Length: 123
Image 1 (cartoon, rainbow, N blue to C red):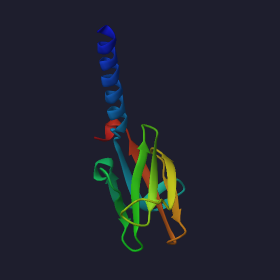
Image 2 (image 1 turned 135 degrees about the vertical axis):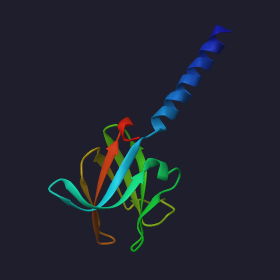
Image 3 (image 1 turned 120 degrees about the vertical axis):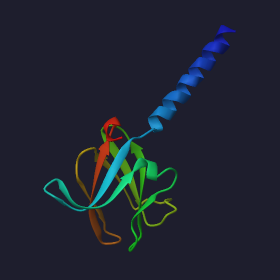
């Protein structure tokens, strides 16, 4: 009986751990350019809550969608997709939180910058 209770407590702990890791608190700013490590010309602000199960449009022409596949207190991994289905990524990038990173999409001849803000302090 004690083994069954211990197994139940262990399973509940695993579920809680999995749910807490998926609770990513990040914002990603989309900017026109990166000038010496500083993002300039903010065009969009994306919160992780905006992307519950599908990706969000960054540009409409040419079509470019963004999905956050992983995030932590130190970095965010984003995928860029050519359509809203977000099945085959054009590019995946891991971006350090607080840093401005230039993203190029040669297929669509686009260059822009992303800057994530991560952690509990943003909400």
